[in-house]
Length: 117
Image (cartoon, rainbow, N blue to C red; front, side, top):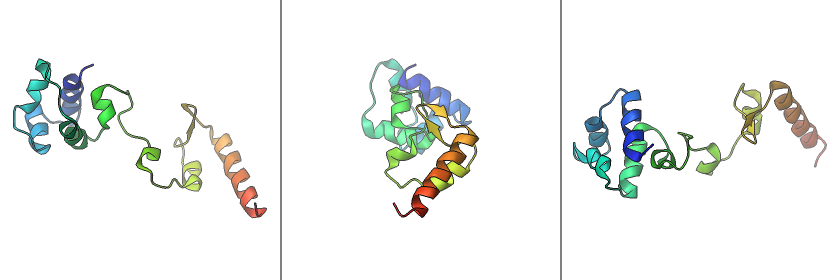
């Protein structure tokens, strides 16, 4: 799927047309239609459109099929206690962790903390 196709499809999913996306991204009304004619957008343009549509730049460019960047890519701390206590939030090697496995990990972390290590 091309940049233009992903942008068009996402705009439709978000209840917008391409002119609205372009305007919200600070572009001219017809800017996005150029990218359907083989013109490649520059990074600041892709970033602005990704921000409007709420997806990652890599998704729009077709580098990944994951729409959203991972929490780790934001370089903000991750609260394992919170993640392991929420349903369906933790994954390992691309697979969701079972509730039993998450509970076991949390218990292991707490036991390690309480042992003074």
